[in-house]
Length: 151
Image (cartoon, rainbow, N blue to C red; front, side, top):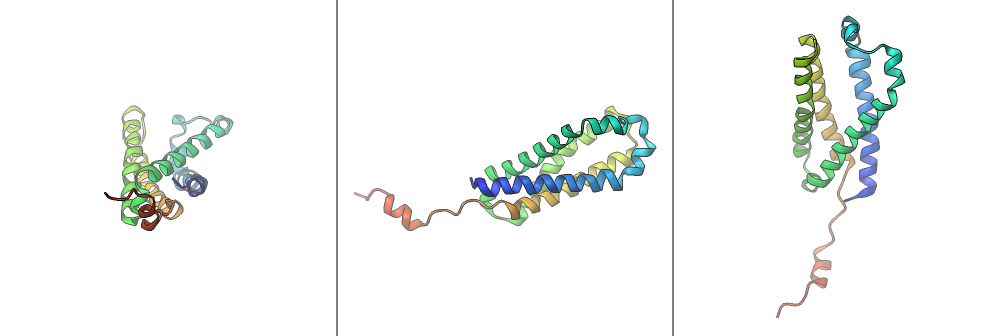
């Protein structure tokens, strides 16, 4: 595993998740949240727990990058990264469907969360593809020199 590139990917992806969530929730969905104020904590209560939000976003970015690095990066395929991002987003958006069932969310808000989550996953898949590169494999000549001689 390429530790330097993994750390870079985690940091950049954390910043990207924060920025995308700010745009999605702080700008695009702001009016929907005002219409459903009874469902949410007061802004002062949310601000008091902001560190937990950052931790959640960091865990999301870290897990996304580590799973990519451990299981998919060797393929070095943009198409694979897009598929990975969409699959991870679908995994994450399963929670949106559950929240829609157990919380009195307007259907339009649940749909917007779902669509935004899929788009965010796609962007993150592309980002992790460009940010994380595995360590280059040693050349075959090195492998041949260290391999035992055939009898």
